Length: 312
Image (cartoon, rainbow, N blue to C red; front, top):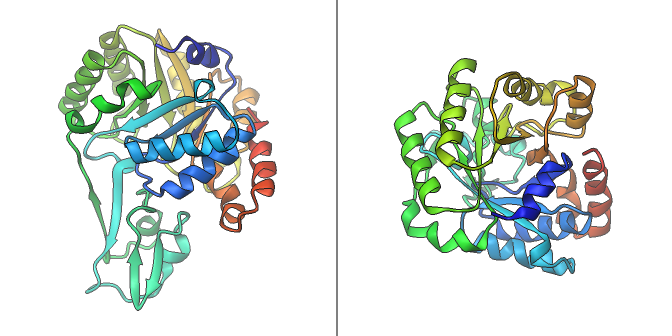
């Protein structure tokens, strides 16, 4: 296990950039890694693939940062996990109103004679469907057998994050057993309360930590992939979830805030005296620099990213 990463988490100043467990836009990953590593970010979360890993490292090296100074986490999940979901459009039901296009933060939806979704850009945030309820939007998952791709990544990453957003306890336990038995590095559990009540999620976390027989990260996902807005209300659920974890008797775990994180997250946590080891920033961190990346204005992107980085 990487002791430097453990020390970083112990500092309670962890800033983790989430590039998307389902994000296959490798050019975007490269640019985001280049910008955020240059302003001090050292912890990155990516899709569990060699292509994503290579793009991340390429972006980091462009900023003259050494690989050994960076902590890399790959994310894997369960069948119901929204982080691993994508959307497609049924052309027979689509009216080409483009309401979904206007809602997409990833610019995954475009119009070319008909409305289409670029699969590599879609991260499954469900914003397009949740706000339109359009019957033409269909969710699906591209499942993979872990044994076919994970072992080749074990010695290349510092952390594996397991998303347990499902009601299938049997699947969670089976996959967690696999990780505990086959990976010796730092493990992270990303969870929210969409399928579990408070008592049940705490019990599940305790069981998993005991099974791991090592210190793990709990990434408390208040509202998955909802960090598009920069206000207190958006980040409130993650603060509440971390507070719940703090008030339980969970031991041997670092706690990172995620899901709706923005520039107000750390401020609200300090105001309410909610202890944590840092925060993971995804949707919001990507959104604030997107226009500058698209125009190749990397200096402005760095200035904007630094303002968020300084909040931790």
